[in-house]
Length: 125
Image (tube, helix red, strand yellow):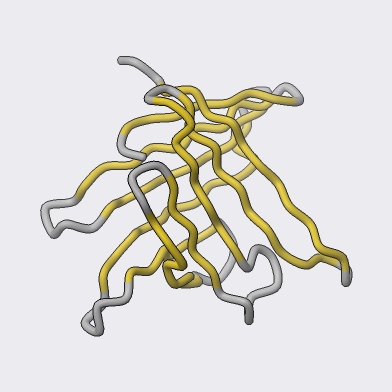
């Protein structure tokens, strides 16, 4: 997940970047821009808490911060979940290749199961 990732669709560009902080946490930032206007922004942290549990902590623009506990992880994928949260209640990332990262969210909206995914390409500086 480390690095900068980008995808386009419906005239918008979504960029997500991840780095390791000196404290060992992974720090992420995401934004979606269309026609020069930012439509969405989010800051994220993947952190290990005192009890050893790893959390994905999301701070979406204009919304409350929420933590999702890690469900599973291996060298190519990771998933986080909090079933008490409506949308999303699960967040996952799959590294399909060194240059392709797929992010997915799952949840309930209007009483219906919903999901969304982003197929990112690595940005090479």
